[in-house]
Image (cartoon, rainbow, N blue to C red):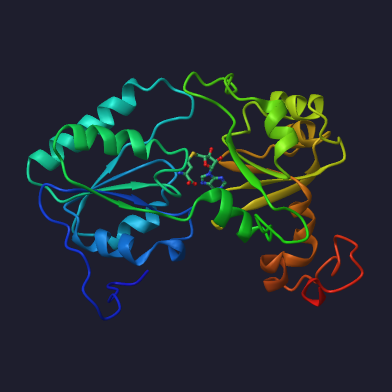
Length: 283
Ligand code: SAH
């Protein structure tokens, strides 16, 4: 890890005492931090970070106090309120506070709730977006979240709601029928229910699916399967969260776009995985 990292020439925002910067840390690989995140890490007095933030990233803030605020998925939101109020307290005591969250803070990360509480308490906030696991994590698995020959729509879904159950207010039928590619966060616990809902709504049992675990970290693992087999294959593989589930033909693109496999010396499995019989660029 670098001892210091000079930001490119320019004027970078100052993290002032009493402020909270709510910042995405990306899906894992520290190289996927934004420059605003690095700037924040260099100035913070205190970094409050989540379970999904790679600890290596904290070494970029050696001057700061590091506070772990991890929550396990599905627990009620009481603890969330404690975290938000802790942020308020730290800011009101005059600290420069960096709230670091996995991926993007506003994507299934309760960043909106935290920012709301801060603002309601008169604490000034800056939001720093990050690369969300459902986009960047899939890219590291060689799965483009959109591809012109596959999909003109993509839906991001969470696999469980505040109660820890599959979101009951979701219209799974509409989602299944209305979006060519589904990217499911927090889907491991209820994968059997989710797959059953999608199949009942008419998605094909042989539809390609991928499970991307610990994406962008050295522990990344990818399982290619089908909608019909996904739940059983996950159980059999012993794969653990965090994972992104991707349902749709984009998964086929991994046969040609698995760039990490290619870096390890593997050949592309199929240069034309959609069977178009022509290079994409020709049309
Ligand atoms: N704000 C985050 C999502 C938080 S919800 C973001 O934008 O990425 C937590 C869920 O995100 C996990 O259950 C998992 O579904 C997904 N996730 C986060 N990091 C991941 C990673 N490195 N690999 C796979 N899934 C990840």
